[in-house]
Image (cartoon, rainbow, N blue to C red; front, side, top):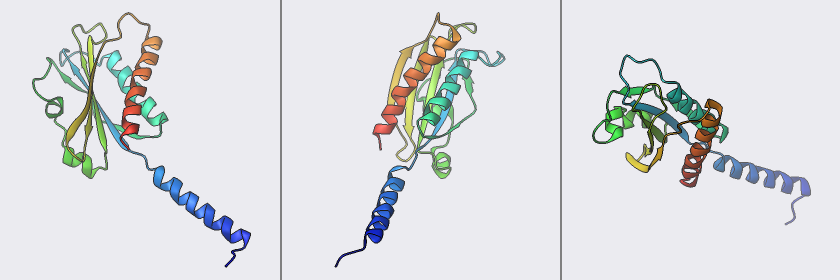
Length: 166
């Protein structure tokens, strides 16, 4: 039985549209910037704000649905799991539709300088596990714009890791 050309075209368009819709599903990612080594009473640190903005920009521009938790500060580096120290509830995150939580731990030695060490953790909400951990040195002695561009380059690696999880 032969189908007229118009019907074939419609069927192909519907199948292609369905296929694209299935693959266009975006993961929901939430960010959590945790500062360590800064006193509670100190003002918000500009470097921490730059990291938070870079996460939002890069993941959003890569097609992810993004949100962030309020920035958290610990006067000293927490012992044990950063996930536990951050105090978020993975069940609540799952109920909110969040797929991944990315924690950036910024370890400061001086209020006036960028963090000495930055550690990234990617937490998969559905299995309650840290699936990625990477530590890098801070971006000292750079102009703000250059440091921001470097941050975005580092975060693009994280985007690629999350993308490969699909």
